[in-house]
Length: 137
Image (cartoon, rainbow, N blue to C red; front, top):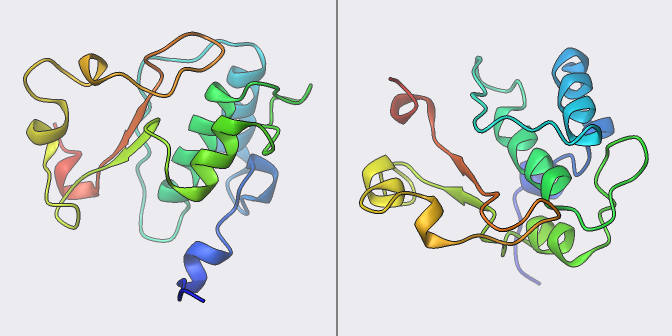
């Protein structure tokens, strides 16, 4: 059996499991439910506030084939399962640990040119997760 860090094993899989960020999750659930998703989201805050956990949940919500009536992802369809397993192209992590900076991931033809896991809104709904030093403008 492969070792899995506790923070990955017990990471929230739907917005309802995120603790202490009700104002954020309420807004994201509403936007996913109403299919009014912005072109970009910036998750900012100190360590341990759920930024890295919330981004894949948002990717699930916008790529889910059968979202629940309340805006939460179903967590059963192929895109949700791929995101849970970490094998989806809809979420790309980059930064010092992955060896690719912003230019390496989104440079050249841009993020859209690489293609993404198609969701109910069509192809191109992908998300990049950058650590704070790379997320500065």
